[in-house]
Amino acid sequence: MAERPLSPHLSIWKWGPAMLVSILHRVSGDGLALVGLPVLLWWLGALASGPAAYETFTSVATAWYGYVVLVGLSWAFFNHFASGVRHFVLDIGAGYEVDRNNRWSVVTTAAGFVLTAAFWAAVVLL
Amino acid sequence: MKHGTALGRVRALGSAHEGTHHWLLQRFTAAGNLLTVLFLAVSFVALPDLSYATVRAWLGHPLPALAIGLMIVSVFWHARLGLQVLVEDYVHGASRFAAILLLNLTAFAGAAFGLLSLVRIVAGATAETAAAAAAAAQVQQALQGMMGGGMPQ
Image (cartoon, rainbow over all chains, first blue to last red; front, side, top):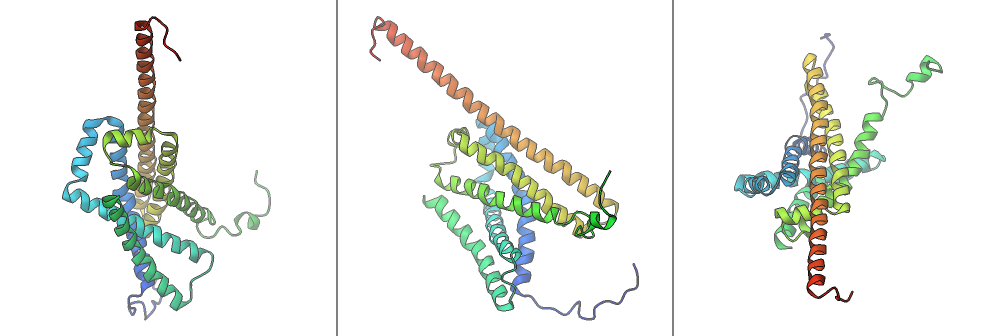
């Protein structure tokens, strides 16, 4: 590695909403890819295989640890969905003013939790 | 034989030599995910239960089967692109080559397994419909036989 001068301010920073929404976008997206897709394939494979295989899947999915994973995956989806829509808005060049960017970063993160709660409420109640 | 000047061939392609190709595909597949995964989420809520019989019958219909088929292609493509960025950020040297190779093999294998499962589910539903139709025809034939062939249409 070349001995280039480093920024003296590289370690001087504080958390902001945009940083939170950025890292959560990566965490939720990669979580969906690495955990969500195998669960999706297990579900589809069991469904294709027959009632016994599907019973095995649902017995794990409806155990307490199954619900932990499913609730986590649903949050990952709705979080990634909300911050993905934010990316579409940023892609057209809008929402870069500091105040507006901070506000929508908070709204995006909150929307992930609200949509997750609404989804499970709908699953249980409807 | 490529035409144009050397400058014209590389202009706007950037240091990765592929321009906005990866970025655009990430957006196109994101739009696909938005539509198809929301379809799945709404279906989970709308279905009366998630038992084997209910879900099999639901996926046996053309529209859900089409939506889930497109979803499998879109989510695995999007995941391949996203995990590629993760690998490029955190894995270096020869390990990166191995990780990208593994990622490509796994993404294609996963999508193929999902589509194959879907084909088996849809084929099963089609066979069940055909068997049900044959059984109904047999019952009708038997009834007609019992009634001397005089059953009104």
